[in-house]
Length: 480
Image (cartoon, rainbow, N blue to C red; front, top):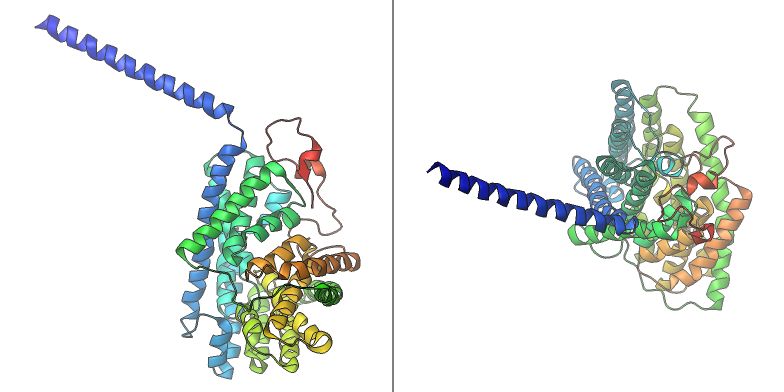
């Protein structure tokens, strides 16, 4: 009996030993296979995961905003909500939104040990790709309270920041090195942009032209994959179609190119003036009122008082742009919206309310394009109005960001109007050239850590992304 048990035990031991050898062989084979892959292959898989997670982060912020708006209105869009409210509530709600957002920032900075952290642009361009969770959650909640209260600031900037934070967490969980973390952060920014604007190609160019100042051909693949997955996730789970519905723009001719150049010239002059106004207001207003909740509350009060005149002052301006595409606007109404929103976004920016100015810039650009069309181009059809709104949006964006390719592609993607690219591209180039000559620093210079006399990051730091060979030729890079 004992001999039989010994034989059975010996057979099981040999069987177990064989299984261990098989597993060891499989593991070593997998390691050899992975080590033979291009290093960007696992990075592309990570980019796909980043795109999916980032789109969920963007939608979470959007749903949170709609939930807060429903507390005081049956509408989801802020302009419609403001239009149905009595005048005193138009004043009260932005005031409470600014005050509440300021209290969140003020209390949060005293609760956590590290109250400040880099923005996603700085973390990707000159940092180590790490975005601390605490300060960014505080910033996100503060922005959520402010934009839900009708503050004239862009919510998309916070959406992209939140998406980049989630991608930074994935990078740390994967124990990525600093170079890979920066690339993962860039993927998160592109995916967040795509989820917010339904514009994956523009999101990729946003990262390439603005954040990095140039992408290697190898890394742009990962960024594009993240942006595409982010947009596909958004389209499949939350919203389909372009961001805006508009009349179809027919094929443009040479006369349209001349008119578009006129719009670009105007944008090249307006863009630097807009940036100067924002910078001057920031320098002069913030030192006057040191208590952040009071400063943000007063900005909300100013926005609320302006909204008594025109409810279109509220919010980032999404519904205004949509109305520009499908409704007839008198010149006086467009001019009033342009001036009032210019003042309102200056209030919000000067108070330090977290958010972005990209969508508010698009609104001002669309209004500028309409005014140029009314006074100089005399649009005679619905598609003409759509064309000049889109060209104005893209050209003013190019004048403030110094990113003409991203701006021209973006106005195509948000409406799926391809023909507008042919008119928008020359306008965006003209606006970008004039804007950069009149004001060397773009709207994102501070976020990129290029303020206070700093210049662009040296090339070795920008080229810190991993490559297959350390001997990669500089000619393999694409600088925009």
